[in-house]
Amino acid sequence: MENVGVMMTCPMSAYLEQELENRFKLLKLWEFPSTTHFLTQHSDSVMAVVGNTKLGADSELIELLPRLEIVASYSVGLDKIDLNKCRERGIRVTNTPDVLTDDVADIAVGLILAALRKICACDGFVRTGLWRNGDSFELATKFSGKSIGIVGLGRIGSAIAKRAKAFGCTISYHSRTKKQDTNYTYYSNIIDLASNCDILVVACALTEETRHIVNRKVIDALGPKGILINIGRGPHVDELELVSALCEGRLAGAGLDVFENEPEVPKSLLGLQNVVLLPHVGSDTIETSKAMADLVVANLEAHFLKRPLLTPVV
Image (tube, rainbow, N blue to C red; front, side):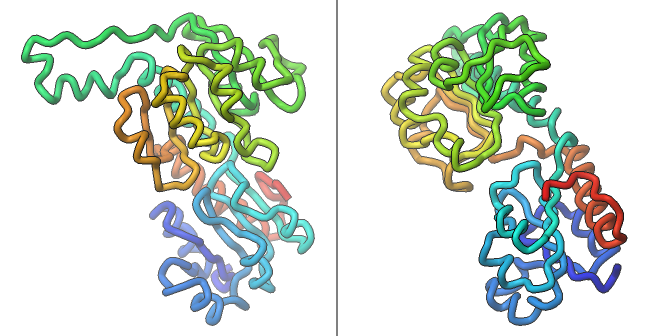
């Protein structure tokens, strides 16, 4: 398979790069001045694309790669891949589900704790010498026993629910359909979900239907004591409305691992003490990064050896 051209869209993992170089002819898009320069030299060589949450395979790129056979996403999310175009062309698509579920669920709980218990502000309180000077830090809010509303009860949403239950929380959820294998309270309307929980956690896939699923009405339903956690995708939340609600006191706080225009973050958020901000690191652990890379490589090997894909999407 050393003659199979595999295009990597952007830096993702040094381990993944090495594993791909050991097996395929690896072509790194970011090492070229532009996509046009890359395609001028290699458009006929690329048989596989490896993308991620930053840069995948849109319709334009797919059209310009006549020999493309498979797109392997180094992510569970598929919003950076034109799935319809892949289906039209008969191009296979894979992602990396399951292996990152625990890490993303863990970071969701971490964000909840950080937001409610003001962990980041506490850290700053100690580092700046305020504690040493005799000042007292303000009281925070308890997590145990809170009501948690989860938007999207898939693999990750279910893992978050399992962790929240260990804190004695009550669980409710919103999804396209009611799940038959759970006793959690189901709301067919996200506004009803937000109205009946203390903490709203966004964990669904990004589609046209879920873009800005958290809008002003949902934020106002969550209310001035509510906490919003987003470990899904940035465009799930209307960021301007979120900033407005946080600044005006219509929402108590937020924990965000994702943003609408990454890596850009609204300046208004940077000065707020009631927000915890992470640079999209939900699945970024040594262990999971390796497992995701191994799954990407295994799917590519399976495809070119004409074996069943491990995690097929298309």
